[in-house]
Length: 85
Image (cartoon, rainbow, N blue to C red; front, side, top):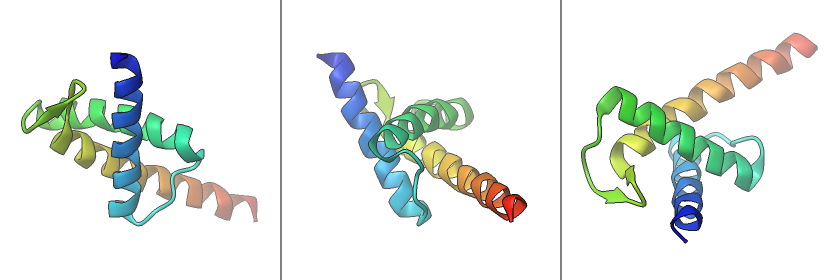
């Protein structure tokens, strides 16, 4: 059950990061979950584990890390789209 809870929280973190960054995450729900997990890892690596914890995610660093990830991913995707033209 905790794995399902982690998937749900990771998806919500990725969704919030997409809203904050103002960018779409490629891959829909799966992309949100992946962005949430990778963003949580990135945020905890850079900022540590502070703030409230839900499903073993430190929420504030996870959201900040996911926003950075979504922003960087959107820049890379935009560069690939311009290169294809």
